[in-house]
Image (cartoon, rainbow, N blue to C red; front, side, top):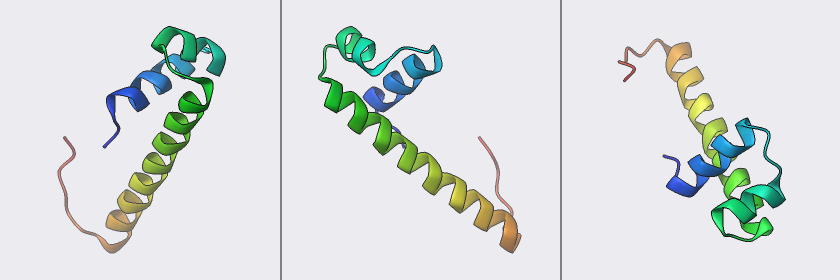
Length: 64
């Protein structure tokens, strides 16, 4: 699950904010922005791998 900060960073990146601008807006350091973004992307990739595996083996599941 993404943290609140990870979500905020990704939402601002989606709006084409640069890391330096995100850092200023969220009152965190630019390296922190980079870290939040990197961690969020790792979690998203892991979730996609799980979903792909579930589909591949034919496990039934409900999307919420």
